[in-house]
Each structure stands twice: as structure tokens, then as C-alpha cells.
Amino acid sequence: MVNYPENWKTMQLKDIADYRNGKAHEKNVVEHGKYTIVNAKFVSTEGKVKKYCDKQIEPLFKDEIAMVLSDIPNGRALAKTFLINKNNKYSLNQRIAGIKPHKNINAYFLAKLMNRNEYFLSFNDGINQTNLSVKNVKEFSAKYPCLKEQQAIAETLSTFDKYIENLIKLIEKKKAIRDGVLEELISGKTRVGEFKEEWQQKTLKELCYLITKQTGFDYSDKIKESLVTTKRENTVPFIQNKDFNMFDINYNTDFYIPKVIADNYPKIILKECCLLISISGRIGNVAVFNNEQMAFAGGAVGIAKLYDKSLADWCMLYLTSVEGQKQIFKNEKVGAQHNLTVEDVRKFRILIPNKEERDSIVAVIKSMDEEIISLEKKLDKMKQISEGAMNELLTGQVRLSV
Image 1 (cartoon, rainbow, N blue to C red):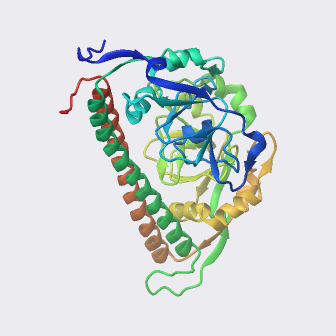
Image 2 (image 1 turned 60 degrees about the vertical axis):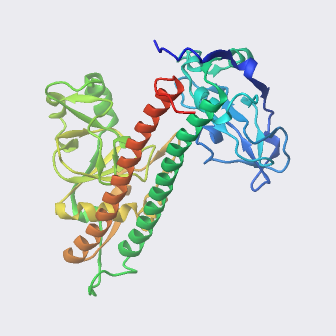
């Protein structure tokens, strides 16, 4: 139970802001238009995913708040807010509310207060699509300090937001540079040092003593019924294709398999450095299994066990390059979901420099990745600090001088 300051007033949204609904834009979408359509995807991605129109069907103005009214069960868009910062740029789509605060309410403060507020999320039963009504929104009740304190809180929180936004831009820039360097080095267009030797081309089949995957029969006959959702003694992580990316392996997985069951399938036990390749659904995802602990491969994962383990990093980087991705997607089978066969994987061709040049290139990319990881950790920490500051300021647990 939060103890708000005594001088903060309880008010419903209907008494402090004007409300309106958006209108359908489906027939007015164009590839490059004058106005940005404010729909659920736009709001939930904080303006990153955009659609356009040439006609401003339902104009949004500076300091209006757009809020998502509908979302699937357990989605992340419901009640997400976006504060409009410019006039004559945005048009409000259907199932998005437009909320214009009155003069005694700071728009930034209100947007933060409403964003994914527990009151709105309480209408989500986790089964059916949630559709917030006009009544639901207008009856939103909260505590408000005076306008000056709202403005002080807004300025403080905006400082966090700007710092986080700049960190995100820096990470994106570093990733773009890293990807450009990877393409130059992995293709041999730019050579490191004084290396001049020709590179060899090998197929994965030539480089590996085993390329395999879990069979559907294995999964349905023994594996599926044995899986548990919490780590227990004598279980190992069940690695799905969402649990790996390049040099990163997530061992805190959704499922774990008893080791006594895993031992029946030695070919798909992960207990040596090898390649993991997504072959169903999220194809194109490749990683090096680092063997920090034993694990077990899920059904959508191809496993490539190399004769020479020192080639793992290089092969992974090559398959994540433009040339490697071309090979992967050239072979995809499109049905209910995207798929690759084990035979497709065996045919992947890898250009390989000598070990010294190879190690030099891998070291360059790893160094750049480590810098990006460090920045991402800093970003996560700053988001946590910002979230804590927001909770304390919006509830009056920490006061600002005004």
C-alpha cells in the first residue's frame, strides 16, 4: 500500500483530460506518406515501426497521449502510451485512444503514469483479447501533485529517457560498424596484417564428423513427456532456437530434460564445442555452443560437430555474414513455418583462411562484440535505475524541490 503525500489530489481521467478514439486507416496506407499512422505497432515500439498516409484522418497534436486499447492475451502493447511531440505529423488509428491533458496536468507526467498502469492491465484475463472501453479509460483514477511538481518530475524522468535513448543509438551505431567490419573481413575484401594466402572452400559436411537434429519421433515418443519447467537435480537445459545467438547461449531455459533420458540420445547431447543452427521457424540464427555446461538440443536446432573445434567461431561468423545468410535462406522450405533440412546444412560452403589470419579476424569481431555487450549491460542497468526513480517519483516516495 503506497502512502501518497497528503497534498496530492485523487482525480479521474475524465476530469483532467479530453478523450477521443482513432479512426480506421487501412484504406489510406501508402509507402511514403506525409503523415505517420499511430497504431498499436507504432506505440508499442515507441515509434520505431511506422506506416504512413497522405491524409490526416484523425490529427494528433503536440502534448497529446496515444494509448493502445486492444491487445492479445498476455501481450505487451495493452495500455502502452506514446507522447506526441510535434503538430501536423501524426494521424490516430482505430483502437488507439487520443488523450489531451487539461492545463493543470503535465502531459509527460500523465503519459508515464498511464503507461502499462496496473489498473488497465487488470482488465486482461490472460485468455481473451483485451479491449479497453471508453469508460475503462475515463474512470482511470490516480494521485496528482501540483503542476509545478508534475513538471519537475517530468523533467527528471525525461533526463533518464534521453540518456537511455542516446545509449540505444550508440549501441545501434556500434552494431552497424561491427557488421560492416565483419563483412569486409569475413569475405576477404579486407585482409588483416600481411596475409596473402588464398582461402580454402569447404562444405560443413567436410568439416564435421556429425551434422544432425532431433527427430519428431524421438520427441513425441520419449522426450516431450519427460520435460520439466524448472531446473532440478540431474536435469540439463533443453536448448531451443531462441536460446542461442552467435557467442551467447542461454542456459536458463524454458524446459529441462532429465539426464537419464538425454543419455539415450548421444548425438543430440551438447557436451562439446559445436555449431548450433536454427533449422525451423527462426532460421538464419547460428551460434557456437560454448560447452560451459552440458545441454540438450531442441527439435528446431541443427547440430554441427566439427573435427577441428577451433573452426567453430569462424564457421559461425561466416554463416552469420551476408554470404552465409544467402546460403541459408536460399535453401529454406516455406510451409506452415520456415525450415531447413539436415542435408541443406551439410551443403553450406565456408571460405577458410589459415589459422593465424582466422584467429586475428575472430579476435577483432569478439572485441567489438564485447564492447557492445558492455554497453547493453549499461543500458539494462540504466533502465532499472530509471524504472525505480519513476516509481518513487510518481508515488511521491521521493519529492523534488519546487
